[in-house]
Image 1 (cartoon, rainbow, N blue to C red):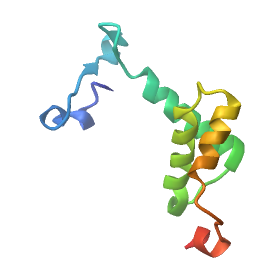
Image 2 (image 1 turned 90 degrees about the vertical axis):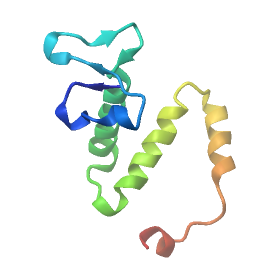
Image 3 (image 1 turned 90 degrees about the horizontal axis):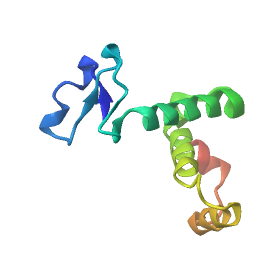
Length: 101
């Protein structure tokens, strides 16, 4: 689901692609086609970078995006369940050397 921007032209060849035409005042089509969710995700990532990290390097941007995605996908979970899910992902000690590699 995208808006009508030309950058998305041709996506329909490889993906199930639908658009909404924001310039014509269309923001939702058929009650399911909209860009609200992805716009919310980008807003959360921006707030995370500005409010928590203050700055991110291009080298680690994917890691910050992965963290935000993990939290976003578990936003409806109760805190204890989210913590248990986090602990289940831990594979051992992360050294500083491995972190900055």
